[in-house]
Amino acid sequence: MSLTPTNEPELVDAAGTRHEVASAGARIVCLVPSITELLFDLGLQSNIVGRTGFCIHPKDLVRKVSKVGGTKTIDAARSKRLHPTHLVVNIDENPRGLVEEIAKFVPHVVVTHPHAPRDNLDLYRLLGGIFSREEQAEALCRRFELAYDEVATIGASWPRQKVLYLIWKAPWMTVCADTYISRMLATVGWDTVAPNSNARYPTLDLTPQTLGKVDFVLLSSEPYSFRERHCVEILDALPEGSHTRVALIDGAMTSWYGSRAIEGLTYLRQFRASLG
Image (cartoon, rainbow, N blue to C red; front, side, top):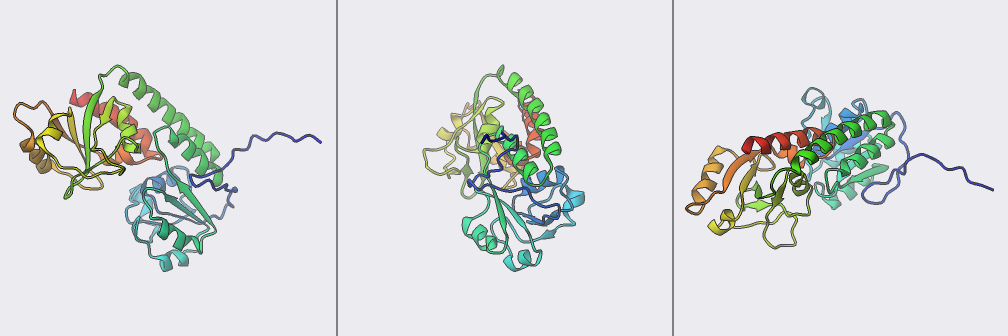
């Protein structure tokens, strides 16, 4: 007896869970802001029943979806009243204990964890496959490939530079090389600098020595909302004669995987070009 090969993709998430194709009446609670945006871009607005208060895009549509809390503090009772069939989470953003609590009443938990820009292709296809939006997912893949190839071509011609990417103040925090953010920055020739630490998002002291050994200090708009006054604070701390430059950067364009990553690649290319 011979087996007939199938072209159907294996819908396996970041936790190794194999998913079946959901019914047309799937009810989705998403605890990841960037993926909530992606679900809308896949045409699933009628299926999204719950989101966090940080899920703010697309603005004209997302406000119609019930809030269930934040990315790390969810109102389980409110979530349960929405009768969700699917919960979409991320390993970095959502505490495991919180996810396990909600999983007690949600049949299907989809775990995501993109490590690098090109992981978005698998993310589009995973969610597109589970929720029968394969055509929309492939359209996003084509757009991503075009944006990525353009950035990779131009980025290869730029000299590599060292950057300190700050995400928090009091204490100061940055990102290590093993993060999605660092790999997004690497597409335009920026290599992140971080203290020796096992933490993915380590704390550090902004000493003149630390600041003086990088080409740029980039202050992200999220999760901490850095402003011009913080740029001035960093500039005042630079060692005398330093050539280090300081700039604000749109954090969503570097850290939001999903459909926003397509715009993010173009933004980073234009942003680096604007800094010279």
